[in-house]
Structures are given as structure tokens and as C-alpha cells.
Amino acid sequence: ADRDAGRRTAVVCQACHGLDGLSKNPEAPNLAGQVESYLVKALRDYRSEARRNESMNIVAKDLSDADIENVAAYYASIPIEVVPP
Amino acid sequence: ADRDAGRRTAVVCQACHGLDGLSKNPEAPNLAGQVESYLVKALRDYRSEARRNESMNIVAKDLSDADIENVAAYYASIPIEVVPP
Image 1 (cartoon, rainbow over the protein chains, first blue to last red):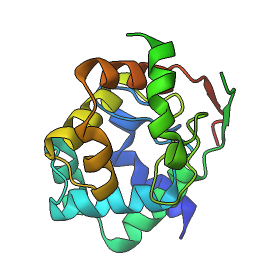
Image 2: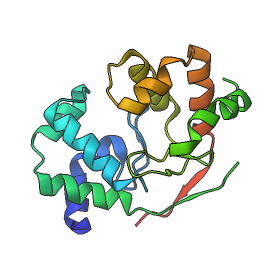
Image 3: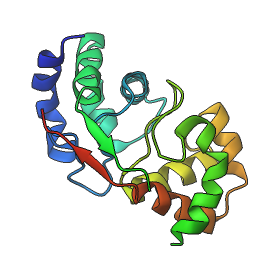
């Protein structure tokens, strides 16, 4: 996957998810460092409407398979560190 | 919400999501530091089967509203740091 292309695609995601992958809206999850295959599956399910969310079904409708793989790779690649409680 | 109770509830989640909220399986997302309201919605949707996932529909079936709020608060409270790319 092409992370740089993913970063360009992420322009449509950033309003809710941020380019840094930190949520900008209480309904939107953080995406930074998320599991790549999980992001690909979520986007495919939003595109096919197997998974329902008004905004995401609209946003995902126009994404190609490559867009999905690239944007998933981009967000998954944002390093996060967890401080275990 | 009661995070300690949430940590006890998380015993059923840890196999896939870890107690530290870092995914232990490629189908399972990281939960550490995730948006609390997003986690509550996801669990409710899995419980009502508005959102389909074999394992999660089973796990969520027995969760009470309090369990859901507590475990969401627990995972949301795990601090993460993002190193913006």
C-alpha cells in the first residue's frame, strides 16, 4: 500500500478523524496506530453498507480498493505508545 | 462509569483486545485510548446486532448497560501518545 497516497486520501477523513488520527468529533474513533486489516474491513463494510453509518457510508462510497488500502496503511502507520494502566 | 469494574469486565475482552488495549489478533482493533462514546455505541450495536461480528455479537449479548459503560471507560482511560508523522 502507498502511505503517501493514503495521506492524500485522508484529506476527506481529517475533518472527523484528523490527519494525526486523533478523533475531532465524539462520534468518530481515533484511527492512529489502528490495526490495518481492521481499518480495511471497516471501510469495505461502510462502502458495501454491510456496516451502517450515515457519514461513513457516504465517504466510503467513492473509495477504490487502492484508496482503502492506502488510507488504512497511512493511519495504521501513525505510531502510538500506550502507557499500560 | 466505574473503570475498575470495567477492568474486571475486560477479562472477557483481553484475549483479542488485551488488558492494555493493544490488539492481540489481526481482526481485533486496538481499544487503548479510544473515544469512550464510540466504544459504548459499538458495544450496544454488537449487543443489538445492529452491527454484525460473530465473536462480538456473542460477547456483547450478556453485557449490561453498566458493563458496557464501565468497560468503555476502562479502555478509553488507557493513555496513548501519538507521534504525528
